[in-house]
Figure (tube, one colour):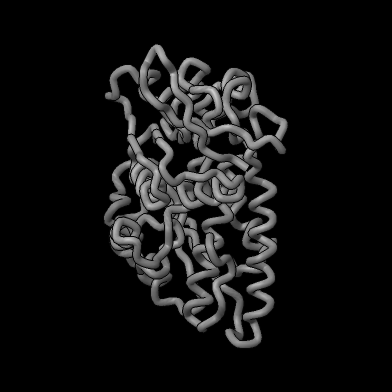
Length: 318
C-alpha cells in the first residue's frame, strides 16, 4: 500500500509530498502488473456474461472498424478479438481498404450503430491519410463508443456523468487503485496532451483529487517539473524520454508508451532500468498499461450490454 508522507527539506524551506512504500512492502520499485489485474477483470466480465445470458438472450457484441493495412493495427485488432473470445463477447466489424471513401466508412459505422447485436464499437486508429477520423467519431453512437473518444463522452467525463471512459487512462486509474495509491492531495504530472490519453488522464486524476500538471513538447525544464510529481504518467510517444533525472525518490511512475526497438523487443517512454532504482512503483513495458487498455475496452462494451438489459455492473467501483 502507498501512503503520503510530508517531510521538510531545510535547504528549500518548504514541505514536499512523496509517495513511499508502507513497511509491509519490501520492494523499492513495485511492479504494477497490468496482466494480472486484466486477467482478474476478464474473469469478472466472463462471469457477468454467463449470469446475464438467460435474460439478455445473446452475448455482448464488440465491433471493430479497421481501415487500411497498417501492420500494428492488424496486431492490435487480433489481440482484441482474442480477448473477446476469452471473455465471451461476440466479435463484429469490418476491415475496409485504405482507399474507401469517407462516406462509405460513415455508412459502415451507421450500420454498426443500428445493429442490435453490437454494444460497443471501436474505430481502429490511426486511419490512412485523407480520412477524417474526427468525422468518423462524430458518426459513432456515443452509447456504443467502446473507446470513450466521442466528444459527448469526453464531455461526460468533464461533468462526471456516466458514460464510456477512454480506455488507456481508465486502465491507468484501475492500476493505481489496485496498488492502493492514495491520489487525494498528491501532485500528479501527465506528460502528453492528446485527446486519446493525456487530456482524459489529467481529468481522471483531478476527479481523484490530485493536483495535476500537464507537460508537453513545449514544456520548459521538464525534469524540474517531473521531479515534483508524486505520480508521473508518461504518454509522450518518445522512446526512453524519461530517466532517473526526471523522477523523485518514492514516486509512482506509469509508462504508457510502447515502441519496438531496432535490435528487437519492446520499450516504453521511460528508461525503466534507471527509474526502477528510484521509484516506489513502475509499470513494466510490456505487461503494464497495454493489457489494461484492451480490458477496459471490453469493460465498456459489457457495461453497455448490462445497461441495455438492466443487469448489474460487472465491475462496480472501477
